[in-house]
Structure formats: structure tokens, C-alpha cells
Length: 166
Image (tube, rainbow, N blue to C red):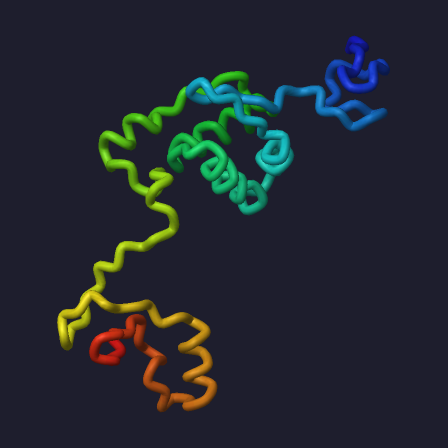
């Protein structure tokens, strides 16, 4: 065991420490180069190293949201993190973003898309596409007011054209 200087405070700490005992600065690598972009996983590292599977499952979503990796690639990265007990300096995904865009198109990654949902639900009565989803809150209120006799209880869509619910 050797003593090294902390990059933050300059005091001596063990080279096997994960963080400086004086200032808390992480001493292990928390940055990873994925497809030429460097990501900081300092928040995800402590969670990924937890023992129980249920405890570190939230890291999959955090890593996928931060990096746009597939579930398989995020799982592979977490496996490497758990084996090394630190973040690898580089990671090459099995399914790069460019390949996924060629295969599936630019779904969800297009800035022009925004949050607009393309409504493809048609009314079974009037064949109109002028429909909207019945919210859970609306269904709960209908059930609370009318009980088992409520009309929206088992319905998901409302037609704005003919006012039917289906």
C-alpha cells in the first residue's frame, strides 16, 4: 500500500482508497469515453457497485438516459463496472447509435419531433383520427363518482368527433 497525493486537497491518502478521507474527492476513474464522447458516471458508480440486483437496477435507466445506449450495451457496461469496481476509460457499444438510426430510423432522437405524439388511433364508430387518450385521473374520478356504473372505467380513448369512448 502506497501513499498518493489527493488531486483536490493535496494531502496523502492510500492508493487503494476510493475517495480522499480528508475532502471526499473520488480517487478512481469516473469518466468513460463512449463513441468519442466523455461521460461522467460519478453518480452512477456507487449504485452500480451495490450487491443486490434490485439495488443497482436503476443505474440501467440512468446510463441509458445519459448515453442513449441500448439495454444490452448498458448491461454490458454495468457488468464491466461491477467486475473492475470502477468505470472503464473507454467503452465500445455492440450496437452504436449510428447503426440503430440506420435500422430503426431516427425515432425519438430528432429535435424537430419535440414531444408531439402522432395519433394513429381511429374511432371504431366514425373512423375519425380525432381522438385523445382518457387520462387515469379522469377514469378515477368517473369511478369515484359513479362507482361500478361509470362509463370510463374500462375505456382508454375518447373520440372528439362523435363523443364516443372506446
